[in-house]
Structure formats: structure tokens, C-alpha cells
Image 1 (tube, one colour):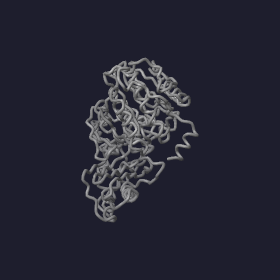
Image 2 (cartoon, rainbow, N blue to C red):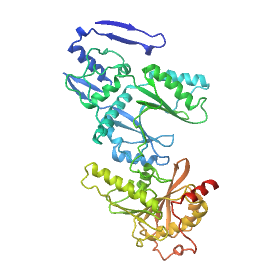
Image 3 (cartoon, rainbow, N blue to C red):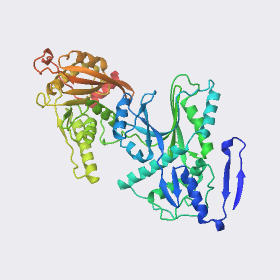
Image 4 (cartoon, helix red, strand yellow):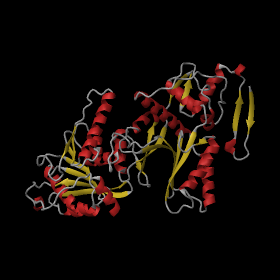
Length: 516
């Protein structure tokens, strides 16, 4: 067996040891040591030929709807038992978990995207000039602690493949092992992740389908891209500058192949003023893409809907109503998470009702195909007039809805009549002293004025300011007063006040868009 030592002249991290084994002398002892070296980075140890997995503790970051950071932190503590920290950069939280709990993070309802943190700097000192700042980022790439994050990425890929198999996806057949080449057990862990051959890590027994898939990916250089999200006005470089130069250094270090679309690894560079976080993405698409298959012009994101429902604090047997359901995003999210409550969804537009029914049927079919013994949902849908709901007085516990902003739906002028009528009818059906409402709107001025006229029926608890499609909106959390409906001046319905549908026809939408 020959040993050739190759040293690079650029920097110390270019040093590596290349083993060129003779196939004639490749023995079991060497194969065993090679496997030990490769699994060292994964937190595995070998005890007399038996592998015992040691879980890693890593920091996971999550992007959440802006304004719902604390709501998401509560869910993380409730479902995973981890204490989440809210980032100074709005819309992100961070929490520590062990890899044996990694599968739980994909079941969080309030997060959009997940990533594992490679390194985090709370007060990073960026150089003043553009050239120096970008050179600093280039020199940072090879000294970062990539090992644990890349191992979490591998584990996460295995979890995704298992979920695909449960959904009935095709499973690639495992390829036979080839032991003609192996790696140096003393090589750097980062280089082995890049260069290890599928045959080198093949155990003596039959490999599992998950191992075969991972080995197939590692047999060729990984494809990657760097995505930079930057906020702050004191940087001498742009997001594209940082992604380009940092990505070039990552490519040179790992010898990965850059690919902006069909990538295996997405490296994240998040910069907010002096805070910088480097991570590796764990989600290919946002987790809010669930439940809804039939979309309307203003369908609410599932993560926003979940955040609004958590503000309601639903209890067992609560009756929860969305009087302007649109595509049914809020009641669908609620009935899946709070199955012991009953949800009513309605709208006065027949297209909206059709979309909601189709989305409900999709979830029911999905549960049935998954082998659920009770595929039904405690939800119903009706077409109604918002200002004359077919519900008994004081029969509803919670009302939550996405109200017309007056942008794509309706108009600001119509909202001045719509909002007071909505609040009055909602107060009628809500239980005095116990009922609550969580209402989303971007027309804050109109809503605040309408709420001030309903002081005898509603009290504002607090407001959560959120970003909805680039619009600054408010989620208003209201409490129903103890006043009996019909005994306050606010109960009197003003004449000529009609309710408009949340869904308008195409001609109205075009006219509204032109006027804006």
C-alpha cells in the first residue's frame, strides 16, 4: 500500500492525504477502519464490529410568518420540548434539538422553512470596503464547522426518503457494492463526505434501501447553491456579491458543482445588520404548502392560518366559525390540529364554497388513503350572508377570519360599511363574556374606527402585526364583552348597510386593481 502526501500552497486547508490501496492487499481490517473514519463525523462509534448511533445536538433555524415568532416558539416548546430563541431579524427562530428528534421539526405547523445552523455570529464585524468584506467571506468558508450540519443534512435526506416510501413513491433498487477502492481513514471528514465511494462504506451485510440511496448520491460530486438573505444599510456589498464570493469559496473547498436549480445542498447565508448565520436548508419547499389544492385569489397561507388559530386558544367542544372562509384555509388548518372542536366555514360566494368543499374532500381522501380509521372531519360548510348568519344568538365560541383588505378583494370604500356590520353580527352569535374573535385585515384605519363604534360589544385584547404578501397587516384579538346582545346602543343596525362578499367577480377585481 502506498502513501502519497500532496500539499497545496494556497492555505493549510488544502492539505489532504491520498491513499492508493492495492486491491490485492485490501483486507477486512482496513475496511473496518475506513468505515470507522467515515462514521466518526456522523457521531457513530464502532464497538467490536457493532455500530451504535450517538445523537448529535444541533441548532435548527426556522423561518416563520413575520409577527408570529413567539407563537411559533410556543409550538416548538409544546411539541418538541425545546426553548426557542427569537432572532433579531424578524421572521426567524432558533432552537436546539438532538438528531433523534429531527423528524419532529417537519411536523411543526407554524414554520415555513427549516435549516440547520453551521455557525452563528451575533456581532460580526464586516470590513468597510467591498473587496475586503468579500475576501473575508471567502476566507471564512473553509474554517467553518461543517461536519455536524452536513451529517444532519444526510439524516434529513433519509427521513425524506422514508416519507416518500410511505406515500408510495418508487424506491430505487440498491446497487451492488464495489470494494475496488476505499478512502484514507485519516482523511479530513469534510473531504470524505465529498469523495467517499458507495463501495467504501458498504457493510458486510445487505445494505438497507435508505443507505443505498445515500451512497448513490455520495458517489458523485454534490450539486449546491448559496442563497443570501441580507437586511441592513451599512453593508458595502449586495446579496448577490456575498452569495457569489462565499459560494465560490465553498465550491473550492468541497469541490462541489454549482447548480442554481437542480441542487442537492442549499447553503444559506443570512445577514441582518451585524448578525450573520450560515446554515444548510432542510426543506426543499415551504411547509405552508399543505392542505389546499384549490386556490382562490387571496388564499391565506396555512402557517398564517395556524398562527391565528393558536391566538384563539381553542378548547375541546368549542364551536369555531370562519364567516368569510374563501378557500377554507383557516377551518381546514384548525380541524386537522384541533379535531375535538367543531368548525363552520361559510361565504356568500358560490365559487368560494366550491373551493372549500373540494379542499375538505381532498383532506378526507388523503386521510382515507393513509389508512385512517376515522377519515371524517368535524367541519361543515354553508353559503350565507355574513350580516345575517343562520346561527343562533350566543351559540359560537370563536370567530376567526381573513377580512377583505380592500385591495384585491372589495374596496376601501365598501369596508366602511362592511366592517361595522361584520362586528355587529359576530357579536350577536358570540357567547357574551366568553366569546373571542381573531380577525386579520390590512385596512387598519377602517377596522379601528369600526371597533371603536362597537365598544359595548367587543374589547381589543392585543394586536399582532404581520406581513401578508408584502402588506403590513394586523391580526386583531378581540374579547366579547358580557353585555347581552340587544341591550346596548351598538345593537341597532344602521339602515342601508349591506354585506359584500369576500369573493368579488372578475369585473370588480379588474376595476379595483385599475383604481389602485
